[in-house]
Image 1 (tube, rainbow, N blue to C red):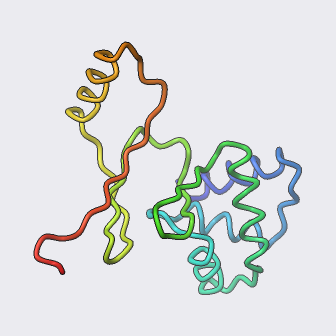
Image 2 (cartoon, rainbow, N blue to C red):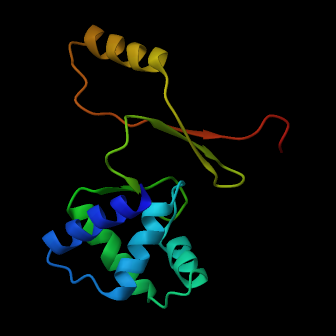
Length: 141
């Protein structure tokens, strides 16, 4: 899946008119292999750990190009650097641990129904929504 995803990301960059250099191709493999919500600095660190020398500016240009093509989404959580995830994931929400910054994805049919009910009661249909819960582990101070 990672190689196929990396090729999709490469195609999106080319469609955006961005040249896919050896460094960018390696960065795209790192991004495609990510199972979490990395920020640009973390992607830069992972690329370096994989032996790829790429500037942080190139990481940002690459991410912005992919976002412009709609293949990744920028997640801006309160008091944290922007993080990134694939745009083609099924609908989900995020819980952000305010102590560690860890991001957990979750889905809830109950929440989806409740949101739709509230919108309908007020005369609306939901077009798009995003739910972020900022959490702290019980017992943590």
